[in-house]
Image (cartoon, rainbow, N blue to C red):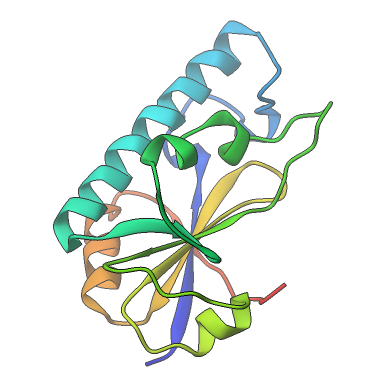
Amino acid sequence: MKKIGIGIDYSNICKDYNTSYLDRDNTDPATKKCMKQVLAWTQEFLSELLENFEYNMYHLHSSTPVKIEDIASKRFLFYSLEKEITLQSYVIQKEYVEYESLTAWELDTNDSILIQNDEDGEGIYLYLKENSREHQWITDKLKNFSLDDVPFHAK
């Protein structure tokens, strides 16, 4: 099966805020409110996803499970004008499989989801097998969101 990408823009979560201005160091009340909404939504979404499929989250190169709080965090989700953003990828799957690179993950046939942050801190990307159970669940769960098709690039 072909792997596809789904982009989730934070504007789907913060309806009344221009999410291109989210900076994790900004203390403006409206910015803080939107970031809290995104953090809470990410926590809930990932919790449901992991529970539904009995998955765990891992780094590409470490068998130690990653906590939801590591992904539902300002450092992963939001850009910083002072510190910029570190692009990161995590794998969501039942059991740990070591991947030497993103290309190795792309070529693998296991049921898994790759989650990446956006270089501008405006959303997250989920990559997975097209028409898989996970793909169907995510599109059903986010049917009220405007989702973007995102090509996968093994950087």
